[in-house]
Image (cartoon, rainbow, N blue to C red; front, side):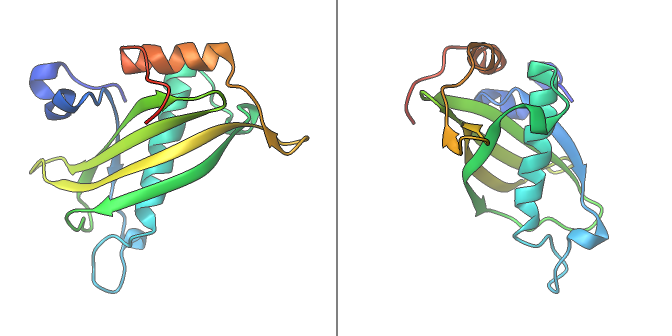
Length: 154
């Protein structure tokens, strides 16, 4: 799931260092025979889960105490059945109890830009039903994965 060296990685220029591969399945398609708009949110989720497992070593999403607060997607080009997509993810900002990811989806063979996105994750105490400060180890893992200190606002 980690990326190849920079000379093989066109997204490296954008600061994207992590990617996960997704093959477009028949069930992802809509009546127009391209990936349904809602499925891109699932592709972002696949990248988030794989990213967190790699950078923090946590494979059980329920143990993290994180909740998705916001998510957007900008569609650039339709993805079609059997295409291989690279879903790129990078952390871009941190606040007291939240952090931001940016996404880029490209089609592997042509390098065509399929979509871009953004999401905000919040450290959350499910019992108390409120946000809590990000754990120091999460802050460290995000900055290590970003390869630089993260700004506090975006």
